[in-house]
Amino acid sequence: MTQKGIRIGGVPVGAGHPPFVIAELSGNHNGSLDRAIKLVEAAADAGAHAVKLQTYTADTLTIDVNSADFLVASKDSPWAGRSLHELYRQAHTPWEWHDPIMRRARELGMVVFSSPFDETAVDFLANLDVPAYKIASFENVHLPLIRKVSAQGKPVIISTGLASIGEIDEAVTAARGAGCGELVLLKCTSTYPASPENSNVATVPLLREIFKCEVGLSDHTMGIGAAVAAIALGATVIEKHITLARADGGVDASFSLEPHEFRALVTETRCAYDAIGKVQLGPTEAEQGSLVFRRSIYIVRDVAAGEKLSADNIRIIRPGYGIAPKYYDRIIGATVRRDVKQGTPVAWDILV
Image 1 (tube, rainbow, N blue to C red):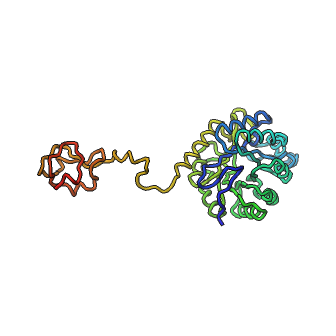
Image 2: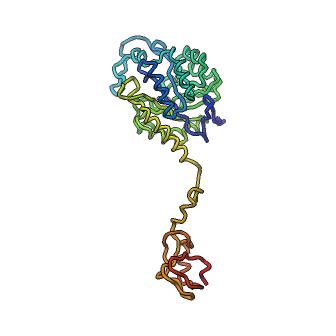
Image 3: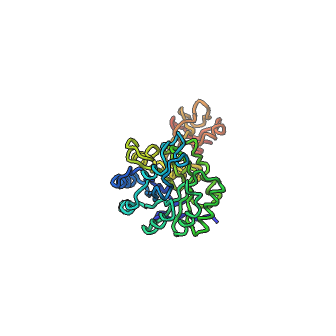
């Protein structure tokens, strides 16, 4: 059964509604509650519909060990060489900040929710009465967490980064089996930053077809092109990281959008949505006034009554008030019934 459109925090999400754009704060608060509040305000000013936090501590994600298994090994990662515990300790949003951040977002008219990374975080967010939950890509194989989130009776958004089609199916089955009736899958490439070539947004309609739910994009590219392309392919949700300034640094700053860029994201994804429209052939109502700039057949030299039309006295020119060019061969050699001056559009009633 195909899932109907859903509502997240009262905002309709799905076909027939503009893209639902989520500003991901992640660790770009750089350890400052004041900066976190400013990020919320910047997201609101940019036109984001929602703000999303991440709810974890270093100790709920990993253990404080510096052996090779617990270090970021990839040289291409912005976090190369750092221990997981150190990284998460720096990046986490203190739980006591959640309430003031969420209050400010609601004051600005935005939906606000979070990604819980363990069961205690789900309980904490439930007490804050969040309107939705997000499962991060790295947690989409954590089926016990997905079941606990889904049992809350709120919309669930699951990022699909790294997941095979079988793993996505397991996550969706776990969510629906635990009571999730409003599901969104986000196509995601879990590299930081991601390249447009690696984004593969052609997957969006496939996920919608297979899983019969809303589908969007969690975008880690540096621009907005991937998000615009995803909307053109039917995405209804876009999630993107926001920062006040990449130059300020921070764990996610290198692949986050600055406020003016985020505003462009909101604007251009809405433009993409508006441009899709419906199948339309022939002139639209807005184009009716442009029909006069088509060519048509005109008298280009004075013609006397009884004279025949020829290439010397008619031409296919602009504007479009005469009969259509497709009749040119038919009227060559026809006789005019009255005198016709140069610049007169050819009409059937001037012919014998």
